[in-house]
Image (cartoon, rainbow, N blue to C red):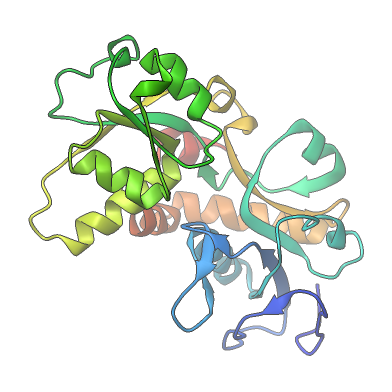
Length: 267
């Protein structure tokens, strides 16, 4: 835990929240990862992870100050107590659990093929053979896309994830491969900006490593190893917001859909 007057030299502090408690923890995020953590027009860090930790704080009686830090090297300062928590897309892994205290799963982290429900020509992974598949430029899913489509000629690169999702909705491609959270976030934005939006996205999970068969299925908050007071508070608060519907409301706000039952049941 850091004192509210403590400054850090490298991270960029966002506007501090109005204090509701004398207990203030600092969470570091890479604020270039929408919808988990990113900057709004005023330069403040916002996003799903930030809403979740603040909701946990409300239940457990602490406030959260968010600071922006580059992803490279974001975890090591936890050991120096430069800040208390790391958010913004940290996935659960055995290696990470051995080095740090981790919260329960706060959001699913799956990779899927997305297609339009009314595209009857796509109904299985096998049906993607010869179909056009869109991926963001530089995506680590491209090799899988080529495998599914059967040829690099059927793969269309888009400069951003948003443009890939928009291309799918506009019928420029038969499917896209993307992280669920990213695709759902941009589809939800497009829907909110277009009152007559009537397209429904359907997903087919392809990432065997992120199926909901254990803690490796999603993202967590990361804390210094041995900080039992903080990790107990975070996990107790996380369970509270799963049980009372708060997490579901935040999930629907950012992704436009309710969270999976598996996520809500996970401890």
